[in-house]
Image 1: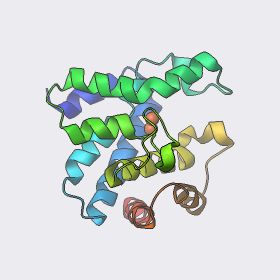
Image 2: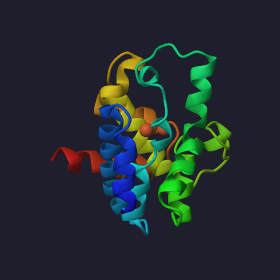
Image 3: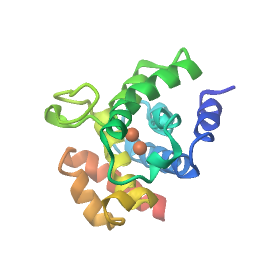
Image 4: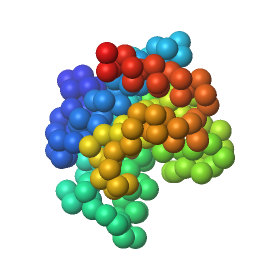
Length: 179
Ligand SMILES: [Fe+2]
Ligand SMILES: [Fe+2]
């Protein structure tokens, strides 16, 4: 079984919105990575598809719960590492970049993210973080923050933690996906 088939099977155990989110983030990451001329856009897209594998063992209600309690937050905070571990189980020879992307997709510059509080996440990590945050703000999961944002408003939010060239590539990928 391929890495993607295994990931799809794992995602099928979670609510359908998670697979849909993962697929949209993978498409955005593929488009943005190509626009940035990064060396391995396909691997980045595959890792993007797997980025939230760590949510597949969440209790069902956590996907729509608001507000979150301390225990819920613990599950949220650990999902990048849980996802990295699950991806390694599904695919023992997972390339290091894919591992770093799954683990790092909630990192933010200046040590503001989790799980490792990286001071300077690399451009691939910021690209995936940007695509993930963009989809969370514009997509069907936006219930937690009071409804979906417009494309422009979501890109402005992403620009708060992502270099301008990454925001530009994401915007380009959004346009391509829509068109
Ligand atoms: Fe996540
Ligand atoms: Fe996500």
